[in-house]
Length: 222
Image (cartoon, rainbow, N blue to C red; front, side, top):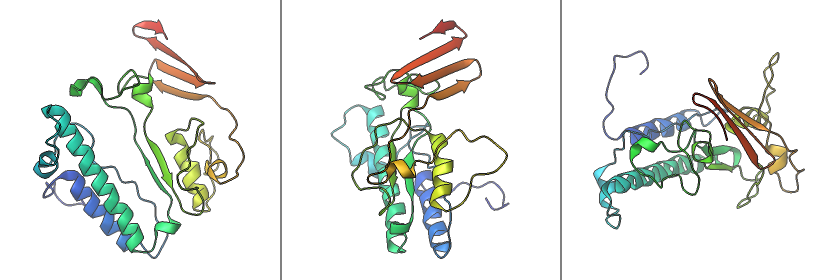
């Protein structure tokens, strides 16, 4: 941290990262800033605070209760970030995107955690790829609206740059699209497009409501 020796933060890691996020917002409130806030919750190792665990006595299964307690912690800390934006007068002029990088893995021992989708993290079934994707920007994205076309994390770069009034980096192809025109009230419909994934020889294509998955080891198509 800041070129210091390795250290262990006091308390729960997601609480600590939120403390740092709050401090960063306050330090940069008078100028444009980009923040990538990536808390530990909800990720392995499954570890929750005692207070969050004790708040969920209705969940009898211990592992599921720990998982739910981590969700509770994340929810509270995201709320702290949003409240800081509001307290500093930034919430009406800040684009906030909440999403994840993948679905839950199978090795955590919660067989229904990705329901109703099949598959896990590291697979290209919907259980591995389909995640929450929520955006908030008052005056630009209508509150309570839902967006039907499939989008991807590759769209964050061009969307955030457009929100900031910046151009795309020159000299390279950008696979994502700026979503802001399509999210605006009365905006145009987003043209249909295929989405692609690849992890070594493991590949997938999604288009028109269908998906093709190709695996080299073992050799199989879905």
